Amino acid sequence: MKITIDQSTAYEEVEISIKCKRIDENLEKLISGLRLYNSTISGKRGEKVYIIKLEDVLYFDTVDEKVFIYTVDGVYETVLRLYEIEDRFAETSMLRISKSAVLNIRKIEYVSPLLNGRIEAVLQNGEKIIISRQYVPVFKRKLGY
Image (cartoon, rainbow, N blue to C red; front, side, top):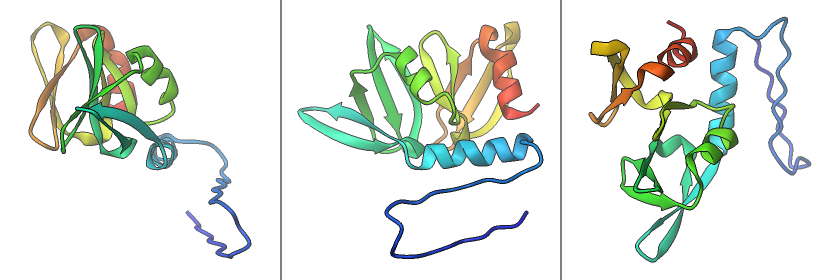
C-alpha cells in the first residue's frame, strides 16, 4: 500500500482519496474507521448536552423506549431512535446486535459462543453484551469469521 500526503494551508478541509483495484475486507475496515473518526453524536446527561465522538461509543441501548449512549466515561441519553442510529452510522463499525442494541465492534476485546446460537462479546472495558441469534450471521460477516 502506498500512502501519499499533500499538506498545504490552501486546503480548507481534509480530503481522503482511495485508489484501488478492488475493495477487500481490510480496506473496508480502514474506510469504516475513517468514517467513524470524524463522526459525532449528541447525548444528554442531567441538564447538559455533550458532543460525543462516535469512536468513544461502546454501544447504544434502548431501555423503556429511551435510547442511551454508553461510553467508558458514562451514560448519555439521545433523542435519536435506534433505527436512526443504525441508518446514520451504517457505513461505520456500528452494528445492530439485537432489537434493543447497536454495538461498536471496534470496542470488542473477544467473543464467545453461548447456548441457543447467541454470542457474548466482552468489551474493552470488561462489560459483556449479548449478540442475539437473529443478528449473529451479519455480526460474523462484519467481523470476518
